[in-house]
Amino acid sequence: MYTLKKSLGQHFLKDENISRKIVAELEPVQQLLEVGPGGGALTKYLIQLQHTEFKAVEFDTEKVEYLLKTYPALNGRIIHGDFLTVDKPFNGPFAVVGNFPYNISTQILFRILEWKDDIIYTVGMFQKEVAQRIASKEGNKVYGVLSVLVQAFF
Image (cartoon, rainbow, N blue to C red; front, side, top):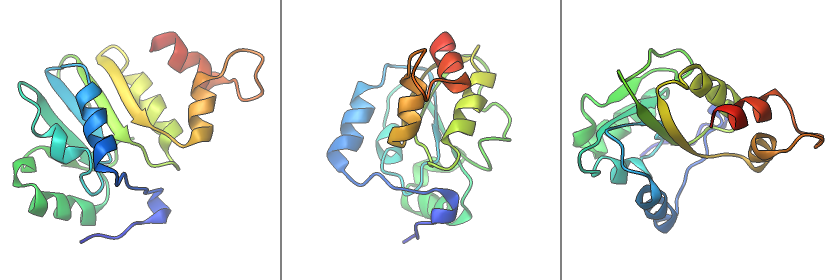
């Protein structure tokens, strides 16, 4: 098993129905990156996608070991590192999906923006306050640089 590490902002998706619905709604892509797979709630479905090269970036050593033991198909597909500093995982266009750690979700979005020319779309679960900042309109008190950049490019 594995432990939740609040110091890493970890929160885990546990509802299987939600996990399946998220994966079912993804647009087909040739390359897909999951950020922070944690315990594999989405991962177990993502690795089953046909005609999709899948990779995942996970910082936590304990989660990497758990994922590799639980889902042997992930061998060679997990990048053990910090999403904020890893090299771009694919050449060419790819999509990003994740249940983003709340303490670095804004930095994750800025990293995605760095790769905007190659990222087709992003599907992310965010803390409510972050989602409100992303979607806010001009004149709203939470409107800011994150709102402008994400809305401009995605």
